[in-house]
Amino acid sequence: MSAIPWFFATIIWLPIAFAGALGFVPLVGILGISALFFQKNIQFRPYMGVFIVALVYAACTSIWSPYTTPLVEIDFSKGDFHVKSAVLRVALITLFGGIALAGAQKVSKAKSKLVVEVFSVIILLQAISLVIIHYFYSDVYNFFEPLITDQTSATLNLSRNVSAFGIGATLLIAIFRHVDNTPKLRDLLLSTGFALFSAYYCQSLSASAAASAILLAWAFMFLPGIFGKYTFRILGCATAGFIVLSPIVFSSFIEVLGDRKETLEASYLWRIEIWTEVLRHMSEKPFWGQGLDALRTYDAVFEDGIWEGQRIIPLHAHNMFLHIWIETGYVGVWLTALSVLLMGNRLPAPADLGPKAAAAICGLWAACLIICNFSFSLWNDWWWALIVVVIGFVSLIHNAWSDEVA
Image (tube, rainbow, N blue to C red; front, side):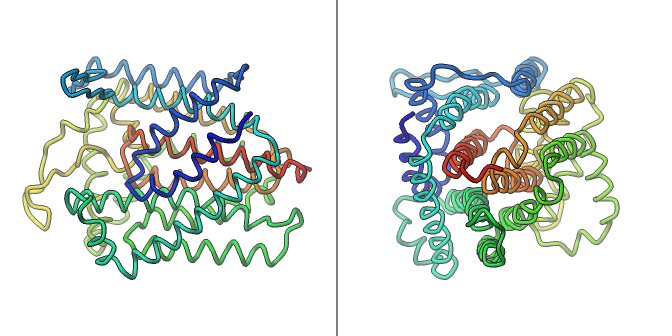
């Protein structure tokens, strides 16, 4: 298959991320459509079937959801076309993303290696850009001010940019971790240094989730050496269990934290308040869930304090696992957990992937766990599009260093 679409994805990564990452959605569409011209046979995997059933069920919950939205919104006079349904957007990303990933697996070794090398340079440039933003934030903001509608948009764009970097950086850490097929102290120091560097500058830009994601990703890259062929099965089982038990985990955490939550930074404290409110409403419709985008209708506000008058739940739970629970209930949770469990059991063993690809998958898994626990809505289409693109680069890493497979 031609590597041109993935070269395009590499080159466009930095401007998309810098502009707020929303462009990853059409990028997945471009990659999927391009792959259709080259990919004749697309292999269907069992966990995909369960995941699709979960999406269909989530769509069905809109029937009893208090929040109503049309599937699409068309204004011929203005030439506007918007996919308004959250689950339809995610479903389209799943469809085109699956086709794109099937195509990525067919890219030749030489072309894959070239794409990955260029992508590594792009991630390094993105790291440098974050350093520049850290030290010269006002100058950067003033330079781009004509393109910025308001300060809130600029802040959101920066947050998404840093999150995109946090996900992309995990792949570069994996490559640094295994520069050679044989583990060396040099590789460990290089990957550790880049992980600490990346985490520090993410934290300096108030992106705690991205910083934590990078550090946990680095730690997870040791798992293949510990658990061997059982690595992904263990990750699948542990993640599925965490999804099912997340209300107990977070309610226990909040209870243990107690009044000490008042000592936390404002962003952390607000998340605690959001989770508390979500957990309080979770028992209202525990089996079927409250319906797609139901959280958007929760308009309770803070009665006093620094957020007086602001909504306690700002449109979503800031925790995708709790989000699944409250909107899709037991049914959605168990379907999601089952799809993750099957995925972990169906992934090839690390030895069959090669050290770089295995480390990249472990790192990406860890980064997703962190960010899904602390940031963004479950139905954020750009987030899932970003994950699809990065998984594609993982496939290219596997292709590029296939000779390192045990």
